[in-house]
Length: 207
Ligand SMILES: C[S@@+](CC[C@H](N)C(=O)[O-])C[C@H]1O[C@@H](n2cnc3c(N)ncnc32)[C@H](O)[C@@H]1O
Image 1 (tube, rainbow, N blue to C red):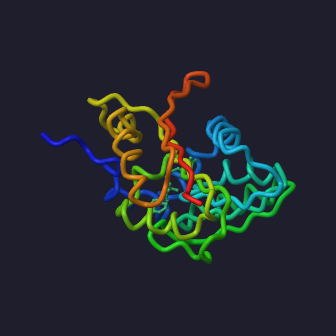
Image 2: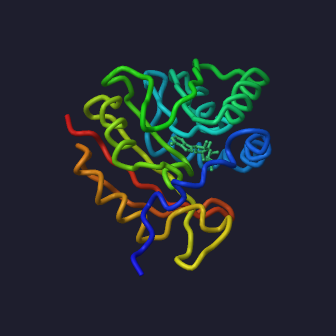
């Protein structure tokens, strides 16, 4: 059997829309701050950055980036996720600015060469078309900019919720795709924070 691709849940996004989308958003409001701090540290986000969070969900990582004073855009195709993101941001406004836009990775509503940092947390495994998403990431990231994909680590035989992440093989295969989209120095790193085990694939867009 062929190994599963890095977007093995790309046809499984119905649960993010409609009334069930609000329940899904609620489940992602807690327990995500560690992932957000991790990518902010890896990218070295500062107030001078423009940050794009693709598949931002309720926006935890975007708010962590904005807390540094950075200018942040969070995109997600799911209206319930964006409703949750806007509500939570009104409750605790961060230092920097955040805009929330309804869009998928296949058509990012931003000009070319806009962002110094782009990340996607627990979302790439849901992208329906990896090539289309990566073409858009390349278009909107500035030369020299950073791209990070973070996923929960999954064992190869996982099913159900536990399969919503990447095996070591899926992370490696995603890293191998990046040079075709102009990215250099792709690095796969494993992380443990408390009980959460994640993997990141980071790379830099060629100058
Ligand atoms: C598991 S949630 C992760 C949310 C958030 N990044 C987090 O870590 O809390 C996956 C997110 O990917 C989004 N998503 C699904 N299809 C997408 C696409 N084509 N482009 C961008 N994001 C997508 C979903 O709507 C959902 O908000």
